[in-house]
Amino acid sequence: MARATTCDHPDPVTEPKHRIRALHTDSTITVYQAYPPTIGLAAARDGRFPAEWKRDRMTWIKPSFLWMMYRCGWSGKEGQESVLAVEITREGFEWALRHACLSHYEHELHGDHATWKRQLKRAPARVQWDPERDLRLQPLAHRSLQLGLTGEAARLYADEWIVSMADVTPLARMIHAHVRDGELDVARRLLPRERPYPVSDEILDRLRT
Image 1 (cartoon, rainbow, N blue to C red):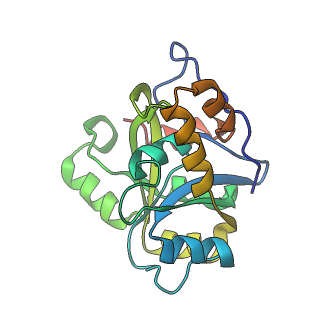
Image 2 (image 1 turned 120 degrees about the horizontal axis):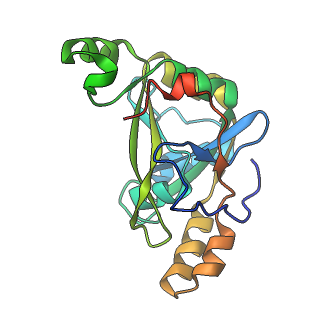
């Protein structure tokens, strides 16, 4: 997995409302998930999900480290004590985006509610945009992408797209400790280097609210 380094801090004035920001290389993108240790530690050890991980359930991946911290409470929430950084192929990630549907109805995009419901039912992936978070986990004006995978997409994710898996729980707790101590500059330097992810407007225009 690409090494965590200083994070590019978006300018709140110029940052667009909807843009994917992620740690990425020419061929991979890193996303985050949080699990109970029985799943998370085994996955990090073996580089694949254990048998307990259910391929028939919706699984949500998050390119934003700080949004993952908000969701799992810096790894403090029950059942989310183990935070994984999952490096997957950009090809797989973009396949999911191309086959995704917004998780909520938008009249200008979908025309009518019944059309959206049919698209959502058929889609192996769904997208929602939630407020990005700062180091204190307060909401920002711009949005962070969450990508839900189900059916074919979940199976492809687990069996074909994963390049590496790493337990970043110690990193999460270290950054949180610096935030609690008011050492925000130190905490910021430890964040993964998330940069705008290059994806075509043709893909995003179907997925923006």
